[in-house]
Image (cartoon, rainbow, N blue to C red; front, side, top):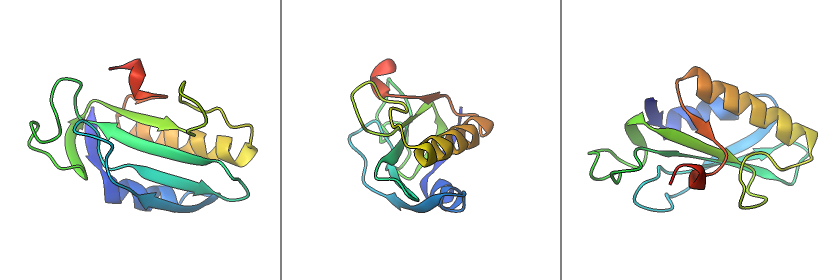
Length: 120
């Protein structure tokens, strides 16, 4: 587990090759962090990233915020093309950026999954 820090991750991802921009959006519910949407050069598919502090407690119950969650249990990384999650795009640049982000998150100690339904 590692600390989820939305703005720090956004900045690191924007600095990666082939990333046009990373934008922070709101959370989808009580259990997830604010999400990061990543636009990729030369691609029309985007990547979506969000952390989950716990499968048992909401962000509020953890005493955290949607931008900072200590000891985040897992991070969802997907291209949003279908409900299975993960990487489903056939666009090379999307695959390259997906691999870089996945590696970046894993090196920081996150358990990266394709879709939150793998855990909940």
